[in-house]
Structures are given as C-alpha cells and as structure tokens.
Image 1 (tube, rainbow, N blue to C red):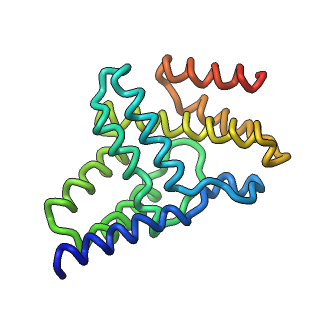
Image 2: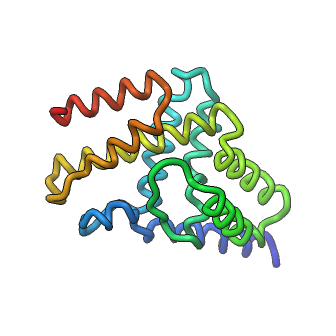
Image 3: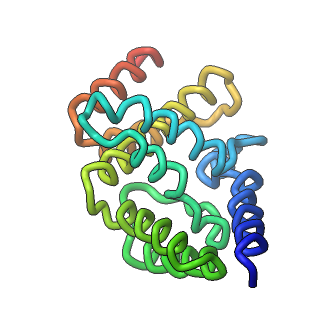
Length: 183
C-alpha cells in the first residue's frame, strides 16, 4: 500500500475518536458527553502549558497527551478508576498495533514508542501526562457540575483524581478546583 493511502486511513481511524463519547460521563447520565478527541485536545493544551513549569519537554508532553487514547479507536473508551491494569494495557497495545499496522516503519515506531512510554509511565513526561489526565477529568466534571448537566454527584471523579495525582503542585490545582466547587 502506498504511504499516502496508509496515512489517510490512519488519519480517518484517528478521527473516529471524535465520535467516541467518554464512557464515564455516559454512565453518569450525561446526555451529550465530551468525546475522547475533545478530552485529548484539552489534555494536550494543558500538557503544553504546564510542562515548562515542571521542567519537562512541553512538545513531548503535548504529543503524549494527543496519542494516549488512540487505541480507543478499537477498544472504545473504558471507564476505570485508577491506573489501567495489565490486561487493559495489553488490549490497548494490540489495538495500537492494528491502528498503526499500515504505516511505514519509521512513523509506526515513533508513535508506538511514545504510546508505550505513556502506557508504561517510562518517563517523567509520561508520569506527568498520566496525572494531568486525571486533572483534566476533574475539570470536565467541574464543567458538568457548573452547567447542571446531571443531577448525579460527580464527586467520584474528583476523588479518583485526588488518589491518582501525586505531584504537590498538581494537587494544589485540584484543591483550588474543589474550592471553586465550594468543597
């Protein structure tokens, strides 16, 4: 297959994330929840903006944020609390292999290497993006609360973020968000 066709197919597949709604929000009864792509976009903006304050590579953090949920094209969005288990990572790794299978070796290796770095939290940047992933989730919960989009409590999303975020500066942001919530 020529590289243009392979790239177009990859871009189309990645674009499917725009139509995959975040499961956790659907389970909470939110009628039109954000998509995985919307989540990844804000996470990338957060990663790029915050990384320099943590003496991290901002571009790498943004890219990790953009690609971290790519396997969900095939696995769907899996709602889970905490860190993903080995089985989920194995399923996502298989899905990533399928997603990248038609790309040239250099592109495939670059993307899969970065995704494996994120999934295995093999760098400071990957661990940072994993934590701000939880902060982004809390920000989205705050948005839904403010807009009164659901009658159900979204406290569990804040609790999960509080458990998963270990960096004191990020916890300070989460606590500020909770203060804004009146908690």
